[in-house]
Length: 269
Image (cartoon, rainbow, N blue to C red; front, side, top):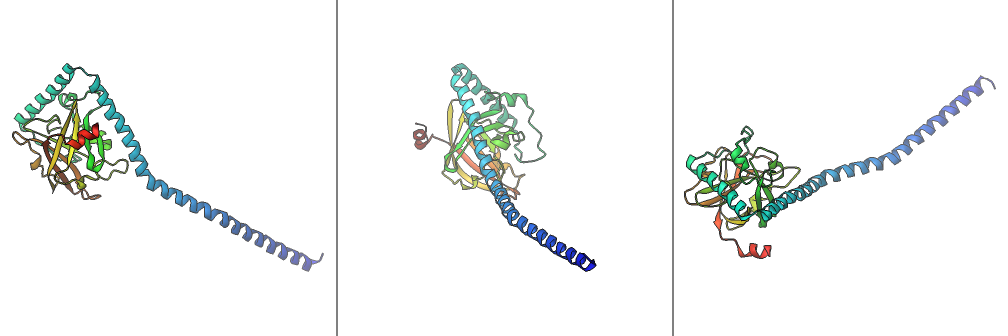
């Protein structure tokens, strides 16, 4: 084979190699493209489904907390229930006499609750849950936890420590706060759907305490004047951040004690 033949052979070899490599790259692109597309779709689905799945799991866990609390109440003696209720009433009486000042429940600088007397009131199961709030019209059924700075607010509704404990009675005003827009749980996201005349129920100890919405308002975070206790009135205010995703203001849902609605009694039956 002379030099021309060698050169010709080398050229043919290079052409074959180039063609083979090009074919390989085309083949790789053919099977790689659908895999990448499938991965993108799967990632998108995971992102879409995460909030739904996480909220479902949270509701399951919080239902266990509420059911455990109900079990403790069912197994308690009348004397125990009376003592627990009286402890909460005494706490509320001292709170009213001392004119405690309610602060913004979502203030990031708010100190963590360390008042042992407060933390012991209504802490029947020892997990920080004091009761359950049920708002039928927006599908809320969540435990109420002591304080607004602990982990309870990540999973349920928090009780503002400087407000009355939710056992009802004259000259009481319980303030209950819940987040809006958590990626892991739906708490008070639909609170803006509540209207005057709607009701909700606080299940505390062995009682169902019903409250009917009397007014709603949007205020700045430091405007807590409407959260004060009013003489002889039995009030509850629900609080969350607004607007959604901005959280520059607070949505307040004011409610006053009412008779337990017939529809609630029928629902329980």
